[in-house]
Amino acid sequence: MQFTKDTLIGEMLQEDMNIATILMAAGMHCIGCPSSQGESLELACLVHGLDYEPILETINRYMEAKATV
Image (tube, rainbow, N blue to C red):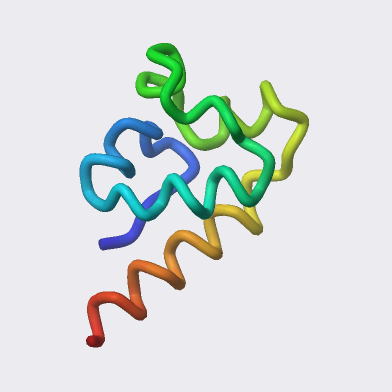
């Protein structure tokens, strides 16, 4: 599965809760916040002053690696 900048945080976490670790390591510590569940990755990164592209790349690499195991 490939995510995009428009994928909601909640959708990512429903697919794999381990993505929370990636998001938290990037500086997004409010993953459990109800509003974060309905935010896109791009919007959540904007709120936190982060560039979504490296985070999205890390998440998609994680998902690809998981799919090949």
